[in-house]
Length: 99
Length: 364
Image (tube, rainbow over all chains, first blue to last red; front, side):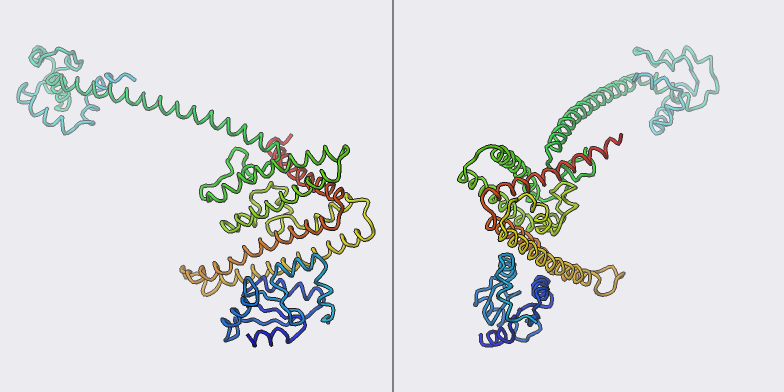
């Protein structure tokens, strides 16, 4: 979906979330801890929420939120972000986008 | 208990128990005896005939009617007395039999209880989680614990047994000479064993997330260190670090980085949990408190609670990944030593729980 592709490239680190999703909030906190200021899209506040959800699932996410994009590319959900961080591969990825 | 003695109570009491009966009999006997009191026939011989009453009529003249009643009924209707006596005997016999059965039941239950308490003590000595830690004589299962959780607790008991066995094996093997190949298979088994626990917990969390969150299956000392339903990975790394010596510089750097990443990930999840608590409290307290009806609040709160399962899973995922990374960073021998140290650390915590519980019971 074009909108999703556009939204996911708006900034270095983009997180698709929902206002009620606390796990998305946890992911956001982690990136902020690393010195990055991610762009948060609360899709439940978007009129096209359903379409965005479907698009995210089609891109490969097991659940629509949280969906993390770095440099416009889909990294994954909480699991993937945590695994990458513990294997020291997350920090190099966000280096170009540090504040 | 002498049943027949009830009939030798003063007539007045007899009357109290069967007033209606008395009235009918009194009327009848009044017609026959003209209202005469005959004390002699209070005692009820089995073969007494109504006619013998007339011999004593000279002794009393104005006997109160109810006394006369007693006289009349006992002397006039010996078969009724007999029947009542027989009924009483039968009732007493049945009562004795019931009492005997009840006492036997109590005895059996008492023996069962002693046996169970012995089993519990034995299990506790071995460091297993037993009961809720409050009362050593109470069983751990509450009435409303679902069968899935009961199954989990039993499975966990077996998991601990296997864990203890693996730790003993590692201990023995590391004190002697052991090939890297043999050690590698022991390390793999130990890792798989931990991963199995995470799978068990995930299934249990779907059934009762609060149960898993509060670490109810763990011993009390373990629960003191609980972080989202299990151990805190960064804390564990801190405890185990000295046991990996000697570490190369690269390994030391990797372990320190891992520990820092764990801390950051734990911090992020903790903040997410705080937000969940906050939003849950908001949902529960929404609207007017005090009206007495709160179904919409319950519906909303239940939706929020779904997220708790995700958090428990995410925390276990973190533990899983920490173990994986340690396995990657360390040599086989270092990993074996680390797993032994980890296993004994938890054994010590379980032993601490037992010792503390024993101390609470017998403060000397």
